[in-house]
Image 1: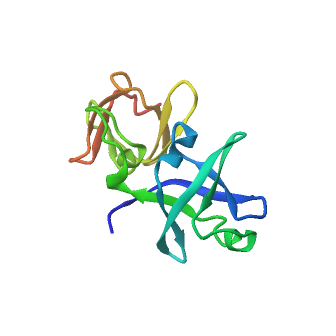
Image 2: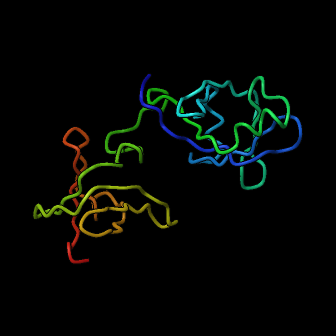
Length: 166
């Protein structure tokens, strides 16, 4: 099976007819509904599920999966990660990256100082932030052309204009 990309998580139950609350990692949040086949991780394996219907509900998403028509069956899925195969993600323009592609990259300064590896990213509203773990944890703004100078996925490296003492 191809690399699975986690798009969200089943966060709870909604009603008594098998509907699920979903926390979506996509932007916009309802973008997760564009994928009609989901894979949910249960017992260390991915299981295929077909999205029947779904919509935004307040700040979250609620969905119903085919064959999941009662609260007991839905309860078994609470806490499961939701993923899609990597090849189902839309192609990006040159210089654009999915967060999942940046995680694990080695980060070096312009002078070649190794700062560590990108653990994860998070949003702040102003810009995304790289969490780089090395001899210590650093938070580096993900600003292309400013803090981030180059990304080389093939080499597994990102070059940043960053003071190693900061």
